Image (cartoon, rainbow, N blue to C red; front, top):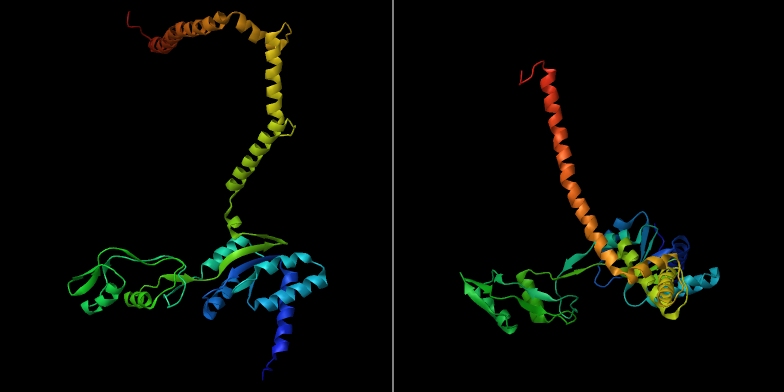
Length: 321
């Protein structure tokens, strides 16, 4: 015979479980659990079994347990979870890869009908086509201003109609029509709202970042630091190459404007004194290369002909004997 625990005893057991999970796990996913049924939640628990634990409970009780545990252990990182405990949420403690756990949770979404008074999470559009309803049902469509026609004894919707907009409450007429059409427009499941990892809290969108995204953001940061360093004339590792090049340009400009010279400036000065040298040098080299090409081609043809003559002699006779 099982002993039924009192309410206070249940709270004590819940507190022990939560404290044990906080000590054992350093990663927590905070998930919204609106419109999630008990069977659906049980399936999620089964799917995550092994390296993750799903914990549901009252926010006030969870806050109290976290505060007391943080004071006992001296670990103030747990307090970062408190602002996230708003609304109907649950905690998923995990040791696995955060992205994989989130993807596993997303698999357990189930379709749901549009109930009266429910706030629509998405836009609901009724597609055109035959509804299979008899002509006596046209009153539903007329109330909702949906254009229809009678085709082969059934009601047919002519054009797609936006029946419910995201954020609007579902009315009785919309719910009745969707039920008659057999449309289950909404799907519900645990939705990850925030991620806690060793005291840090961040958005779940961070889990979608790839290595290419990180490299791109790092490159953008390096570019910004370089621009700032050059504008302030403050030397940094990323700005140093640009500073050296700019300094070289300045020294070269001084050498050209004055009698001062150095090895790297000699060629530039020579070019400025007589630009025609460099203009003539390029065509001469091109002409020499063009003249050498036919001679090289002729030599290659001679080499190809030589083996044929040798083969005649090897056979022991000559064509001219």
